[in-house]
Length: 89
Image 1 (cartoon, rainbow, N blue to C red):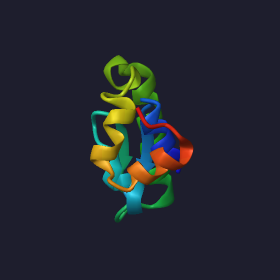
Image 2 (cartoon, rainbow, N blue to C red):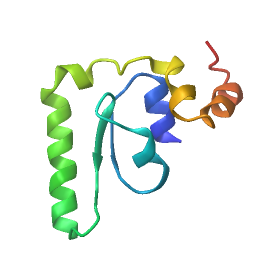
Image 3 (cartoon, rainbow, N blue to C red):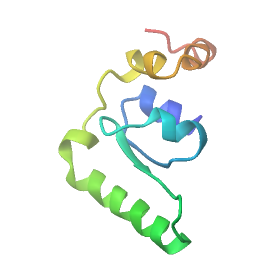
Image 4 (cartoon, rainbow, N blue to C red):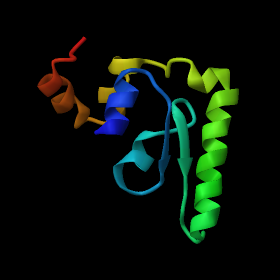
């Protein structure tokens, strides 16, 4: 839910390429770290690098394109979330 809420507000996301969040986030709205074949230290380092990258990359940290209108396109299940929370445009 946190990833959906952040994307709905146009905020960038840093997540792991595991399950839903990894399928939702792309370079236009954040960073996805793939943990496959890496030890914990490598994953933590990449997550840290991604967070540092957000602080340096104005394009990514400025509002992610589309905000609440992009979310239902990226994730059809988000329409239900939008209705439940009353965030419909």
